[in-house]
Image (cartoon, rainbow, N blue to C red; front, side, top):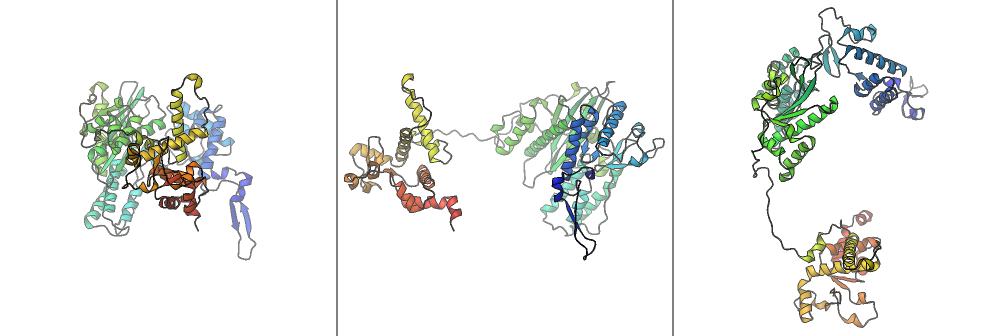
Length: 605
């Protein structure tokens, strides 16, 4: 397939083969003109070409174009139809479309002789003679298919090993290819066994202990029973149902959890068919979890598997029922996810997003086929397990005989999964509100937010005619916001000193700022006094505003000055800040600001 797709001439220089027949020969460079197998982009480019062909022919050849879009996996196609006439027409269109673009279909196989009638023997996968009872098998996408009987078969090929190690066990498990999960109860036992080997911390080539070696040898010997197992490819055995339903069962044990999907169909003559469609299993995490939590994980797996199956089947209006034997899970799904602890809340929210509570039903453990999946089953027992392949008995009857809907009278134990609600009474301090503003670690953003708040409050006190209509903040408005922020910072750290100044005109000598001769101005801002009163300096330089040490907003103020002054050093930063502010322990704060600056650290030689 890849060699049928040409590469753009401008891109062919990236696909070179350098060759010479002998060391003395001249080196030759060959450009590959087509897609090359083994390159990372090859599968995508080939698939994209098929999609492009489908989009160009979907009007004239709708059946063939739809098969190109939906049923191809790289260069393999699996498709079918409920009608032989439709299947023959789809085959004709598909051959015509691809042949027109130099793609020639080969390795044909079918469960009906009419579809192979016009296909040459060289283009068929195997020589199928429908007049005899021989059942030839073919392998497609890892699955063994018996075309004449239209059955999936299982072939297990285990290589005999002298010493059983963790590497051998992992290799054996990899040979059990089961994309649909039909053998999930058997494979989950192998997964649990390998997880146990990891817990023992055995090396890859270390021989297993005697008891584990015996267990795995027995498991391998029983796998031969799977070769007698055959599963119908077409769930309804050629029948066309009048209506279908999806039933997903979930269950968990202390070692594994999983979900199984069943299709329930009502045929035109009233008969009911229930068959296993697919399944998925996972081993329980090594970190110990409670059984209700594992049951919840199984429910999440069930809803995700349900969404995937509905998407693949392209049945939007198909009824879906989900079953679990855990009443705790059902009660959790019927509650608000925010009331649970994080682990449970996230999974309940996921379930509530993908499903409705009305879709969930309760089933007894003995009627739950996922119970087989979570605990595992031997290969010998799987071949005769009717519950696994045909589902619970009650689904074969009318809907009136199903288990009744779950009653939400059972509540999840609060001490296990519900969040503990603690009521705390606090007294709000107006001076603290400035610290609750979401400023994103930016003093400028904080200043603008406060400025807009002040602007709104000022306009609210005025009549409509005298209100300010401009949106852009003025310099005076930003300065008023700065003074408001400083007043709140000072009120938080110098509360006692401000109270003393208002009461007695000076601070006590025991105060840490008494040597600065502090006073409050008309705006109630705490400032530094002293002998600079008689100097010709600007007022803000003579009486800078006091800033406490180790205040988070004071640190943001230092960061702002540091960035505005081109990431200056500690001395220049402190000098710039002191032009209007007097920070307590300013040298330490300036030094810490520069040391925490990521850009300065990267630029430092």
